[in-house]
Length: 248
Image (cartoon, rainbow, N blue to C red; front, side):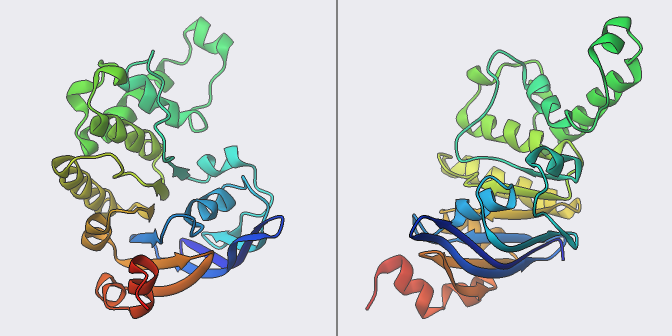
């Protein structure tokens, strides 16, 4: 398994945000984590990244992440995006993407000044170019994100998460704010990313996106897992229907 959550529990005082969650993400799949607002989905992401205290365990490629500093996860080839855009608008698209390599390319200020890191700079350009082609940004590497449509800015964030040859990418509501055309493009790109061998854990509210691209779906409500299965199984599950629609 690429990722395993074992009795994951997150508490904030008397509030149990995630309650003994057990699930696993298989390698080479798109696994979606869904549920109403406040279900605990983003808290799961934050626990994986050791941004909140938790009990239970989280295994990445069989190794526990307990106590692993957040910055080391990128070195382990796990990356994530956030609900809100986190781009540097004074930098070009190319440089924004290249920032995803900060833990992969070993460098120093002195060696850069001396000009002895030419190979590293070439490698960075090559890796940025590869991922830019994958997500359709090849013609925009010299552009500045502030002047690009919102959907294209989302692709810049995705490219930054992928440029480090990531094995697992956590995407937090990547389709939020996209129009219908942008969502279709995004779905196609995520399927291409999966075909390239990258595993995706996705938090998303757009059920059209989730149902079209997911291999497996875990449904949360009030911190608990209430269902898990294929898109068809989830769409027919009465507990899921009740959680979303409030059906008695």
